[in-house]
Length: 170
Image 1 (tube, rainbow, N blue to C red):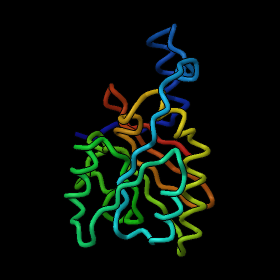
Image 2 (cartoon, rainbow, N blue to C red):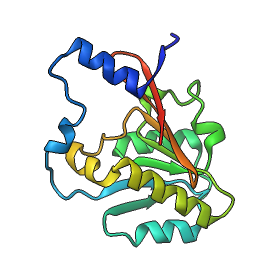
Image 3 (cartoon, rainbow, N blue to C red):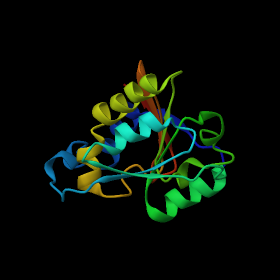
């Protein structure tokens, strides 16, 4: 089934039209426990990058064993409610093989070096407010999302509860 694609701004306007009391900042009014953001790191990420992420106290990084198949990574991330982080955008961004609405939460880091990917990771985490929102919503915070991050910006898509695909960037 083809899904209608709209911008985040249009989606928010639609929510306000449907539900006049809806407030996009309502998540900011909730506080939650001090959860650590749990990631499943693909084996294609450089060791230096994974070590740097592991050193941050707000993250818990699980490393996939070398040679783990993409399908296994996807299902393990879903099963354990971990955000899958990878440099493999060619496969994981394809909705035919890895459907958007079944995403465990995916962050694809782009860049030539570990440093470039680290910059992309920082941009995705900082600009998206990932740590705060993860603590508020819980392990399913990015479920249904696919994020592609680079040092230049972050592009995201998510499947809304009403079947639309919402896209945006920052």
